[in-house]
Each structure stands twice: as structure tokens, then as C-alpha cells.
Image 1: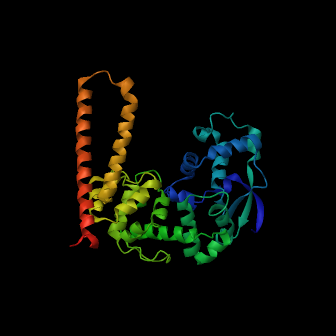
Image 2 (image 1 turned 60 degrees about the horizontal axis):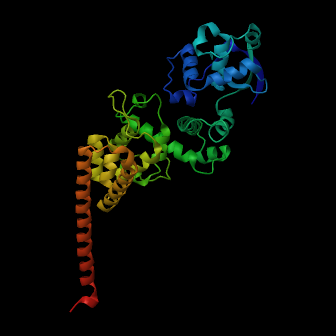
Image 3 (image 1 turned 180 degrees about the vertical axis):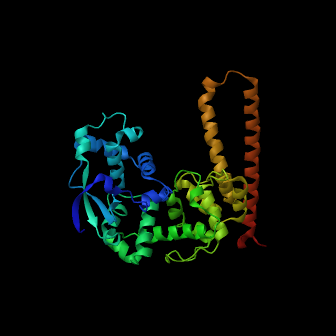
Length: 368
């Protein structure tokens, strides 16, 4: 880092290339007020406001910026910049200011007129510091923000992925996995059949894809041949877009995602896409549980259904003393259950006997 300066707050600008802002679809058309409100709504800026109001700005925690004409673009510390803007422009941003705090004093506002800033020569000269802090360090970004940053360093600055991983202390191939997943998203977007701005939720839960591509079934379904090759293209674009819609839905078409949580939904999806008939059920019903059930062998489904019935009967036995009031409908239902249970037991005994007999006949010692 070249030097530290006290920079007037009015000369500091938000970085629209910040990976965390990109995650929320921030574009150049957003003005500064829009960015302040977005950061306030999505990134817990109130925590920083609380610290600034109670303790002031810590001079040993400068922002990091690059000079661009007469302004300075803050490439590290956009949340703090939003907090500073909210405090010093209280009347404009009072809706973003914590209601539990007193109105900022003139003394505090005056103390924030100039802010300590590390001024770098370029983005490239600071990538190691930011990468270590936010990709693998204490102040971690979301997986999408990490992937965006890694891609920028690799594609724009031509830094090899291995070198990025080395500098940020990544020993688990996380850099490779994040980069590959982002390239998969971009490949889908280049096909003009997927647009991340149309995802059903307010943000792209990138970790669904990043994690999902580690499953062999999902990987084969989209045609990602080589997991170790971070530049390997997806061969099945149609199936990839389908998986992305299952993961993220489509706000424009009012389609909700079928993946609600990574565990167990991603594991279940991995199972489903390995069976053609289960895929068809998921396509037609968008019911992941129904599709998963169809992918299971009958032996498994029979055991599961027996387990569920046993559990429900156990619950009924617990409640019968206090829950049964002599109602004839409930009595009739219990009788039907008894008959079905007897029929089930009879079928199990009959099939078991036939299989046992067939097994004995098959033994060499039973042949005449």
C-alpha cells in the first residue's frame, strides 16, 4: 500500500465492481443514494453505525481506495462508507439510521468530515490483501462474492488460480470450485436461456450450484465432464438451465425453486437426476419429494412405508386413552386398519414362504 491520507468524505465513492454489490445485481445506473439504501438493507450497516456513534472512527482501520480523477473509489470498506454517509447525511437517510440510537451530534459529524484512507495505485496491487481478508480470512464474503472476486483476479489480472489459492491460504481447492461454478453460470447466461437477475429470491444463492456441482449425478446431468479442469465447459446447456431453475426458480415466470436448503435437497436432487422417470416427475410436478420417492427401489420404499406406519400406530396408541370418545367413525377406521394390517401380514408371510421354498429348491443338495 502506497500511502495513507485523510480524504474528505465527499470525495469518496462506492465501488460498483465490489463483488458483494454485484451479488445483488447492482449496476452503474444506481446513484449513490440507492447504493447507501441497498447496503443498509442487505449488509448490516447498522452494526457499524452503532460503533461509530458510540466510539467514533478508529484511525487504525482505514478504508482502502484507488484514485480516479478527483474522486477516490473505495475498494475495501463499502459498508463503512455507507455508515458514514448515513450518519453525516442524517436528514436524508434517517430511515436507515437505527431507531434505538440518538440523533448524531454535530461533534460526531464534524469528526467524520475527513476519513483515513489507504490509497493504492491500482486494484491489481491490492488483490492479495483483499483476497486473504474476504475469501479465506476472518471477514468472509458470500460464496458468490468470493467467486466474482477470484474470477476478476484470474481473468483481468491474469493471475493463475494456483497462485491465488496460495496467497489466500486455500488448501481445499475452494478457489478452483468457486471459479468453475461461476464459469458455469456465465456459460448458461451466454446461451441466453438463463439470467441471474430473474432468480426468484432477492439474491442468487450461489452456494447451491457451487456445492451441487460436487455431486456426481448433478455433474453428469449437466455434462460437466472434468471436475478438476476449471475451464471445462458444460456440454448439456438445456439440462444446466433446468438445474439452475430448480435451484433458483424464475421470478419473471413466477416459478419457485424446488431447492429450499442444501441439506438434504441437493443430495435428493442428485439422486433424482440419475433416473429418467424421476426427472420426468420433477419436471411435471416440481415436487422434489415425489420425484425422489420414484427414484428409490421398491424394497426401500416398502421398508420406509412400514416404518412410517409403525410410528403412526405408536402415536395412536399413546393418544387412544385420552383421545377416543367412543365415536363410531373412529372405531370403524380402527377396524379398517386392523383388516389392512392382517392382509399385509398375510401377504408378507405368503411371499416369504414362496421365496424360502424357491431358495431351498435352488440348492444343489435338494436336486434329485
